Image (cartoon, rainbow, N blue to C red; front, top):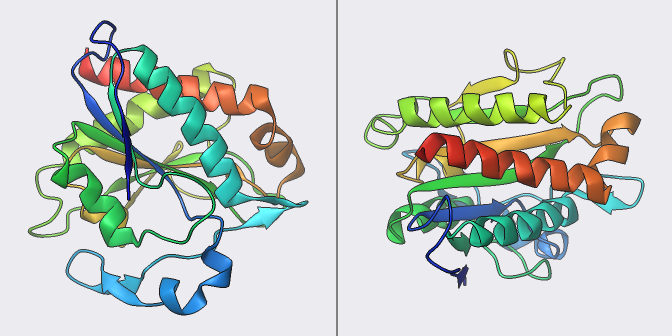
Length: 227
């Protein structure tokens, strides 16, 4: 079940409800039949979930959880109510449809899904996925999600991180095939924080300093979006 936490009413994000989705989960790899089950992804079917990527003994699901916990604490300190799509890094799932609907069913104001990519070792940099038009699903959130994505891109660049050199355009990538985005019903972005197969990106992703930079950039993007 999603874990909900609130903070004091004071702060730049007071009154806001934000869903933080740490992608994948620690036990997905030992529950292949469950995560391969087909679920609704916004008018079409996709696998419930995947295992994510890994490099040098560090798994994406762990990175996602590490950043999500830092981010949740920062958001709460600004007065936001934070809803995590999973309570820890020890289980499997939830499926992408449940993750996305966590936002709409809880009256959230916005949502961010945290990930890291796995590509060729020469590829590097972050990219932010925002939803394309999927009729009857994303019509109302395409424009605000794109605005949130642009703010997050700018904050990540200001923190010293580089946009992807291999996917998207200037760090942004619009897609209509992701259930987490298609079913959110609120402004939503998915951050691919870097390429775990690139040694430079991996060093940043697994460091406390790098994770703090990412979490702080997301907070500033939400502050700018809601200002």
